[in-house]
Image (cartoon, rainbow, N blue to C red; front, top):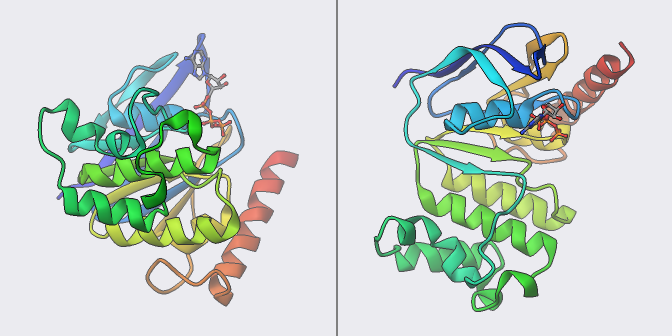
Length: 234
Ligand SMILES: Nc1ncnc2c1ncn2[C@@H]1O[C@H](COP(=O)(O)OP(=O)(O)OP(=O)(O)O)[C@@H](O)[C@H]1O
């Protein structure tokens, strides 16, 4: 498998968001993308997913396989239950969902007791977990996650990170996050996007998911925070 590559420059209202970049997603690896709010991270995700953006890309996306995208907004259909929303992909394709896989993912996402509820009866964190379950049900080679754990409490966040890491082994993953600890725990590769361009940052040793208290994870988290605050001050 060849890496998915996005190269070029994004313009919105005629203004470049950042200098020309080359974002390469090594196959089967988890890449995390950090950077200040509004720099263009979600826009890159949409471009890689092949979706329209508010501006234009002077460049191209190469080697895009079938993709599953979990956007920032859970985007649940209000007239479907948790179980039906999680199985939306197969439903839209006119296929039967793998019931055993669906039950297992819902249980591991802590949603078994909420399977028959509609989105209006769920908390924000529960809705985010339904969106995660729907993405994990898709079983695609390329998985794009936009702040997938942002609405979760600390314990649930770790559990959902472990669930995603386990189910996405062997997939090519790009996760946008504002949480350096999350990036340090989960990533094979960490990229930082700023108005100055794209850089690759050091990653802790050992395979993800790493323990949150792992000294390498803590050091990486600290280094990323320093980089992010330096960039903010620049
Ligand atoms: N549909 C659109 N039309 C016009 N401008 C847009 C559109 N979508 C995004 N933008 C602008 O493009 C820039 C990048 O937005 P984007 O959502 O990619 O940033 P981000 O890095 O993901 O931010 P955050 O971390 O806050 O989610 C922002 O200035 C935003 O206002």
